[in-house]
Each structure stands twice: as C-alpha cells, then as structure tokens.
Length: 440
Image 1 (cartoon, rainbow, N blue to C red):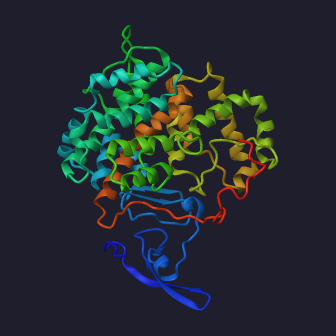
Image 2: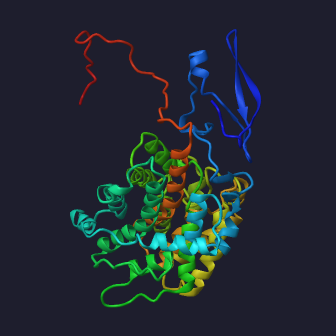
Image 3: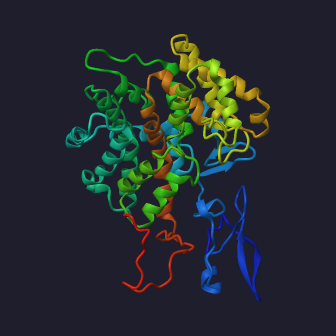
C-alpha cells in the first residue's frame, strides 16, 4: 500500500503463522507510534486481524490532530491546544484545521466573511422544526435538520468538485450554530432569533440562544470567551467514534451533509458526546456536598454500578490538557456569575476538591476531564444539560469537515469495509430443526 512521503517505510515486521512467515511494512509517524501495514495480510495469509473497538488499528493517515495521552498533549496541525485557546478564536481554528495552517490577518478577515454569509437558514428549513414534538431532544432536531440541508443546498453536493467541497464545509460550520440555537429555542417554546453577522461566532450563538422578542441579550465578554474556548477545545480529537463515523460514511461517496449528520448521531451517545450531560446528571443524583464521600465510596466499589462521570479519559492517562484550560475558565465564569444561588455548581467544585485529594483517584489518574468542566460552565451560562451535546456537535463540525475533506483528497482512500469474526451457525437445512426456545 503506497503511502505519502510523510510516512516513510522504515523496516518490516515478520509474522510467523505455523510454518509460514510474512513480512509486513512498518511506517513511521511524525510523532507517536509507528504502524504495521496489514492491508495485504488477507491476500497473502488468508487471515483477518481481530481488534474490537479498533483500539490498536490506524484506520487512516492524517495530518490534522495529534494526541499523546500519556503526556497529556493535544495539538491541531502542530499547534498546542493551550496556545490556540489563549490566542486564537474558533473561526481561525476552523480555518487552521481545514486548510492546514494559520491564516494571516487578511485571509482570516475574508474567511470570517465567507462563514458568516452562510449563517441564515432557508425559510423552508425553519418549517422542519414544527414537525418535531415539543419535548423532542435538541440532538434529535440537530440530526434531522443537518441531514435535510442536502435537499436545500444541492449546488454543493459534488464531492469531486473542490469549490463545492469548500462551500459545503463553510455552510456546515455556519449553519450548525443556527440549527443548534433553533433547537434550543424550539425546546423551550420561544421564537427563533435571527443571526447577527456583526458578532463573532460565539457571540452570535449566545445571541441566538438567549435573546428574545422582548429583550436583547447582553453579551458578557467573559461568557463569550468561555463559549469560544469550549468550541475550540472540542473542535477535533483525532479518530474518535464520531469522526470515524464521518469518514466511514464519506468513504461511500455520500454527500457532506449526510456525513456530518451521521457524525452528529454518533456523538449523541452517552459514552461520547453525551458525557458532559451525564456528568451534570450525576451531580444532581449526588444532590448535596454532604453526600460526596458516600458517592466516592460507591465509585470505588467495583460491585456498585455507580460511576463518577467527568473523571478520567480513555485516551489521556495524564491530566486532560483541555480540562486544565477549562478549569481556569470555569473559575472566571463562576466568579463572574456567582454560585451562591446554584447548589449544583457549588457541589461540583466541592467534588473536584475532594476527588483530587483522594488517594484512589490520584493513583489511578482519574482527574476531572473536559466533560466535567464544560458541563459546569455551560450550566453557569444558562444552558440545560440537553443542550450540552448540541454545543459539542457545533464545535466538532470544524474537525468533521476537516477530516472529511482530508479523506476525500486522500488518493488511496476506498470505501470502508471492516471484517468480522463469525461465530454463528454453519449451513442449516430449512425445516429440519426448529428451536423450542424461540419465543419471539
């Protein structure tokens, strides 16, 4: 399998099966682990590899995001996440992820105009919301409306046209915030608020969510910065479940809106994008700071089903670098709005202090993760837990569109087709045997 020059073949691995030995190329990564190329293993040895969850499998080559979970490193296109969070804004990061480097001032100014010109939705799309039940989850609306964009913007469906691909990515990023804000407004029974293109991406989102026909929302610079930081920190995270879903859907040649809708669906799962909502629901279950020690002991008990949500991370075996950034933002936000009137926010801060000192959590490196702090910040800003995953999805449109674009432009990309370890019946004869256990 030929690779790009950025991944030179360094040596070969030898795999011996019975009396046969097979040589498999090994390729260097710029950073991180090297990879063994097994793409020809089946044709040579008539065997597949078995890797549930793909935890040891590189599904693609990418130049977008690098993670070192042991060292707590996250970089977009080589730029450290902390530097981007402190010095950049979300649209600049979108540009970086999609085009590969930071734009200069003129390029960024032009790109922001290209994004903001797409914030409005077609009027007929607005009618889609009327078809949802009033108690529908905002993510259900996000999935449905995102996929429906393909029927309205048919001039950007040709994935082989570079201009149409670029225009589609801009539309997806711009319209995702409008869709998300409308989903929120619909869920609380308020009129939709049109975007204002003189505002930044984050300011505009807050405006669309919290302004109403009776009162204009006064945008706090502290809350706007917090919102922008959350968008930046969630913009991409390598080949996670939703990003892999976008790439897999895209490998079939599906249009970009359908691919992103697939990513939104995957993100909705509580083990992925729904983790920050689960963290807040856990705090509500704990109820009071007086109950913290009780629930920490429950979390330590392997026989107890209770889990301390918002602590630890599958990838980061050190402190989540995004959590470090959000912890500082969280402190500023809570100081700005005060937490005296919100017992859940006070409980969260008390839980953090106790858990960080607990020997069990320290030894297992179960530090507060990005979901813990983002949930607290979003609640403090005024969002209900149902909106947390929607905000995550808006953020991740940056990474999804960048990953989708990279996948389309990869000369060796082909339709995804995972294999399986079959453990079902061998050939059966119809009518010979009927199961008495069949109670369907």
